[in-house]
Structure formats: C-alpha cells, structure tokens
Image 1 (cartoon, rainbow, N blue to C red):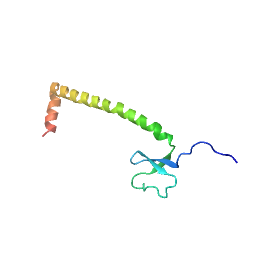
Image 2 (tube, helix red, strand yellow):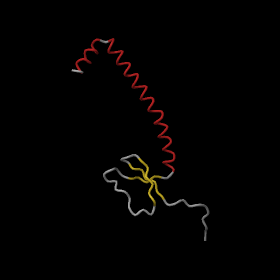
Image 3 (cartoon, one colour):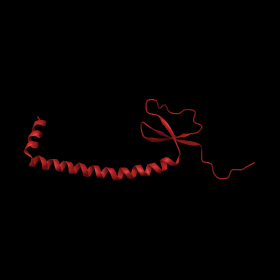
Image 4 (cartoon, rainbow, N blue to C red):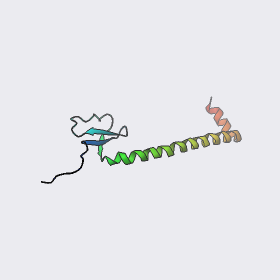
Length: 98
C-alpha cells in the first residue's frame, strides 16, 4: 500500500463568475452551487489562475488609469485651444448649447 506524504489542503474549488468577473471559492463538499442563471455562469479554474491573474489585473489598473487621466486632460486642453482659434468650431459649440 502506498502512503501519501505531505499536507493536503482542504478541498476547495475555485470558480470564475462570467457576469461579475470575480473568483469564488467553494468547498468540494458543498451541496449547493450558487444560482448563476441570471448572473452569468461559473467556470471552474485551477487555483493557480487567481494567484497569477489578480496581480496582473492590478498592474494593468495602475498603469491604465493614469494614462486615461492624462489623455482626457490633453483632449480637454486641445478642444479649448481649438475652439478659441477656429471660429467655425466656436459656432458649432454655441449651436449645441442652445
């Protein structure tokens, strides 16, 4: 008879909810899986996926949000400069605000 050595982690499975984009831990002995018909579906993923995906998602968030802020600021400044220089654009803006 072969003996298994090491510590066995408690039986949990990791699921990805496609509607809310979140990872959910459910015990293997759970008799009920949450109802996901209205909120997407659950996809079982290996436990290593959230460990790798979460820091990468955070990194993208930290990089993407400042870029969006800078791009928005540049766009607002460009529109202000363009509206003060271009008389046709100034007339279009006045028509839109009526």
